Image: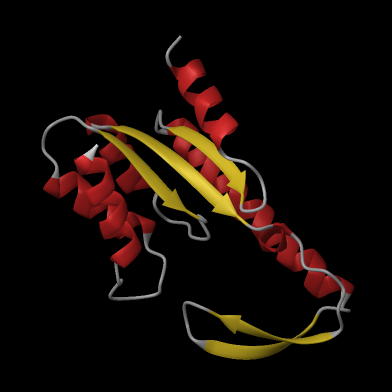
Length: 151
């Protein structure tokens, strides 16, 4: 119990060196640092690609589960007109014309591409996946996943 509380405390207090999502680098660090076969959870929005190779390597040595946490606006942008948007990774603010159907269509297509990449990449590497939206309950999803995995 104390160990779990320490892990949670460290996760809450953690300050990353970069705001850029780099799942591949995290997997590479994990694979190099942990030599004994372990169960690991990768918690991310998975708005990243190009981590298939490092996931295959990590998945061959460890039991990996990806937990995708996302917001409904990560998948589809509403028509709100001209909106200032912050790119949290780059720190840039850009005005985006959300009334443009092509912008909304491209945004959704990119979100679907990244979600498909996440699901297919984890599946091909033998790793499990869970996806949960920030406004949904996650407990039943986690319990269902572990119940299914235990079969």
